[in-house]
Length: 436
Ligand code: SF4
Ligand code: SF4
Image (cartoon, rainbow, N blue to C red):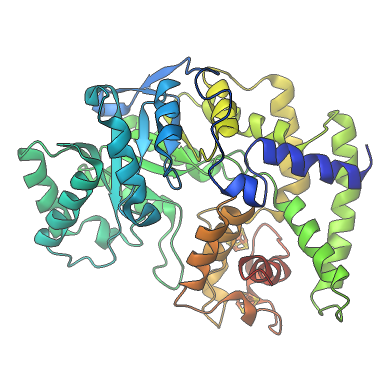
């Protein structure tokens, strides 16, 4: 298969995996014939010190507002549900509440999160917001209340949060305490995901965390998993899939070329790099007899599932096809040939993957552009199919945006230890996230 046909096949395979671009992947699809049956969860793992047996595939509820789809998730045996007060303005919590009405509440582990940006947050504010979560979820209690991506260890230790959790636990409204982390903006707080999660492990009050681990961004995740295992803290994983950046770059570059406008300065060097990688990529695909990216995605999830200290992998389920795919991964393991394939992929395409929760180059940017956060929004847009969410996040940035990058000397690029052509990637990300 030549490169052009491979890209087409990848796009359709990604769409069927639910990770493509456009309306089909983004919208909630009509109920498919598989909603009543389909693959079921085959493996349950003990969620650290909570003792709860959770499905190895969990629901990352970021976009689920379709009660029927959520019911199907539960019917497949998925019993770890990750929500947040701000997911679709509370709609995700409301959907969960409706769907859980006729279910055994004790059979499902529901966690929700509160965004805290001030270490001086009051106990009363946390109590009020937590009670609103309970109302939307139509439940007497949540299994875990998390701080949503705290940017600093000071926020992690906010007395107002911990005093409120103590009271909510005494009332039986909250069972466990946790946090999520996928990296903060460097200009917001120069603390890494690892520093914040290690501080949480040391703190002793956190029972669970949601964080990034995948086959390219693995060292940091493995150190955290080891520390968590020692303290029996539950490890739930997000962003298990780092596949697809290369395909996105090709598409955006094509768009620029086809626009008929003068080629921006940053593009020729990137094109050269893409061409070089494309040649390596063809060799890679031939060696592994690879016909589409979806095969890699399956291997990427299996890589995470294969780690014995991972308790559940949170997957973004936006339609029934995705549900089928994720549920069918339950209980499976990475094969030796798949492992080799991922290693070769990391070698070839890893040079385009802006590591989630990295941010090492951001301190070098004189314009305060949050490189890692912007590339995360790009990931939401084109790898997760959450286009509106990604664009809203990008539009809401209070810092410099990537339109500042085109005329810059590329300090971030010089600082990236992974050698990414990040300046051009940021400019393309601006194009993607503004539908430019
Ligand atoms: S460009 Fe490089 S250094 Fe900067 S956040 Fe991405 S991977 Fe890290
Ligand atoms: S290209 Fe320049 S403005 Fe853009 S993030 Fe890098 S250093 Fe900052």
